[in-house]
Amino acid sequence: MSKITLTIDEQEIQVEEGTTILEAAREVGIDIPTLCYHPDLTLHGSCRVCVVENLDNDSLVASCVTPAADGMNLSTRSARARRARGRNVKLLLANHPNDCLGCDRNGTCELQDIVYKMGIRREEIEPLEGEKRNLPLDDRGPALKRDPNKCILCGRCVRVCEEVQGVSALQFSKRGFDSVVTTAFDLPQSEINCANCGQCATVCPVGAITEVSEIDKVWHALEDPDKHVIVQTAPAIQAT
Ligand code: FES
Image (cartoon, rainbow, N blue to C red; front, side):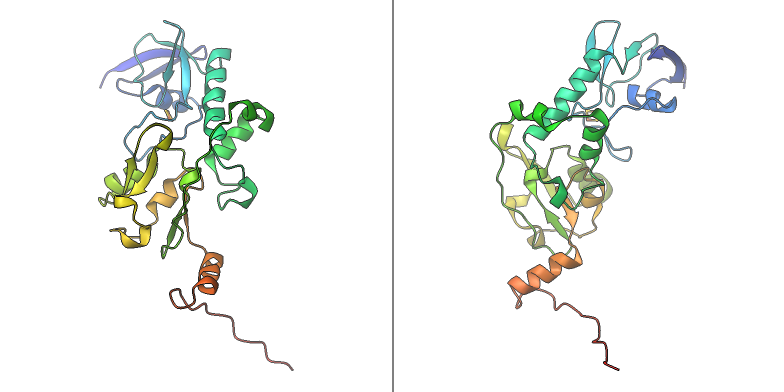
C-alpha cells in the first residue's frame, strides 16, 4: 500500500493510504477525544466529539470516519475545532442525567473523562438544557441492566452485539429526540435472545449498560423474594 503525507498540528506525518485522520493523529501521539469510535468495531461517526478543522477548506470533519488524504493540512487544536468538540459534548450532557456520583460508571465513564479533560462546567450546560428523557429502566436481567436515559446513542453496544457476538439483540429504534437503543419489541433484556455475554456493557462508554452487581441482586431479592436469587451469606462467626 502506498504512503501519503499530511500535516496535523504543524507536524508532517507519513501514513498508509486509507488511514483515517484519527488513526494518523494517534500514530504520532496527538490526542483526539472519541465516544462512538471503537477500534474493534465498524465506524459510526455519530457523536462528532472527534471533529478537527481541515485548514485547506475551512471545514470541520469527523476524524474517526474521514480518510487522511495526501497534502491535507489539519488542526486538532484550533479555536474552531475545540469549540465544536466542546459544543457537541455539552449537547450530549444537556440530555444526560446529572447523577454521576450515583452511577455505576463513576470514575470509568468515558463521557465524564472527556468533560473533565475539556474543563466543562455545569453552568455552561444549563442554557442548553431542555426536555429530558424519562424512560423505564430494564434492570431485572440476570446479568445486565440498561438505563436508556444515560444512552448517548453511540451504537457501540448495537455493533458489538451484531459484529462480534452475531446476536443482534440490540437495535436503534424511533427517531429524533425519541431515538433509543432497545431490544426487539422493547422486551426486557431477560426475555430476549441475549447470551448475557456482557460485551455491550464492556464497550458502553457511559453507564447505559452495566453488569448486575451483587448489591443489585440483594435489592431484587428483597423486593421480590419468589423470583430472584437466594443471596448466599457468609457463615455466622462463632462467639468464643
Ligand atoms: Fe468520531 Fe464519534 S468518535 S464521530
